[in-house]
Every structure is written in C-alpha cells, then in structure tokens.
Image (cartoon, rainbow, N blue to C red):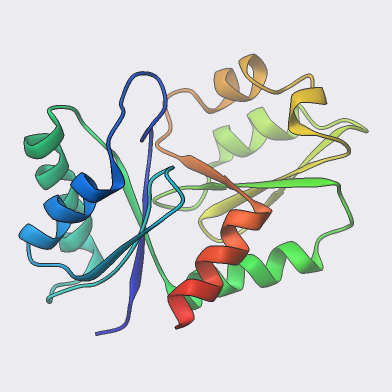
Length: 176
C-alpha cells in the first residue's frame, strides 16, 4: 500500500505538546509501518497496514485520543495528492507567502463565501479539491487576516494549515 501523510491538527500549539518520539510510538503500536514525523507540527508519513483512508483516519484519531488524552483531528493525503498540492502552489500567481488549509472534503459554498469576502490586495484565496490556498502579499504576520479574521471565517470547519515549504517537504519525503 502506498505511503500516506497524516496532517494532525493542533499538535504542539495551545498547550497540546507531544514529543515526536511519543507520537511515532503510538502510531507504530496501532500497526502503522515506517512511521516518520516531519518537523514538530503534526506531519506524519507512514505506510498503512491495510484499510482505506476512511478507516485509517478515524483509527489514528482514536489512537491519539487514548494515548494523548485529547482529540486530534487527522486529515490524510496520499503522496499523489500532496504532490498535486505542491504543483498547484507553483502554478498560483506569485505571492511571498502561501499557506494551504487542508480540509476533509471540498470547501462548501458558505466557507467559500466567507473567505472570498476577505480577499484584498494583501490576501487572496484560491480553492482546490480539498484545499484552500491562502496567497499573501507579504509575511503572514503582516496580513490583517492573520489570527482573528481567518480563524473567525473558518470557525466550525475541520482544517489544518501548512506553509509552502512544509507542503514541498511533505511531497518530496512521501515520494522516497
């Protein structure tokens, strides 16, 4: 079975600290193979021991709830899907900062409308399959949407964000 990427939401932010060794232990003990963590922000490469993503994702969530004591939403992508995201970033109009919000399903009309209403000369959103590309004309900390407005617009949706460099690294490492 091909390698998968688990994007864990909320790892090592907001008091939910976990050592990457512990994360690898938990996921290996549940039967995943060749578990590798990338950076310390909830990026896990692995080979599933069987089962479809609709089963593997909830199994990882249950494992982490039991092992860590709190819920960790998990968004899965295959190498091919992550490579498509990396390629899509390259095809976007140039922007100093690009962040990708990964979703479990395509953005619905309400989320699209909320984010489209926030577009400006500084911030633009491009919608992909199960991703939203946030193109910022500057550093993320310079965006008026950083923190409050983006968080408010996406409240109620399960998503996790990664920057362009992390997406590129995940695409490259999952290919190996």
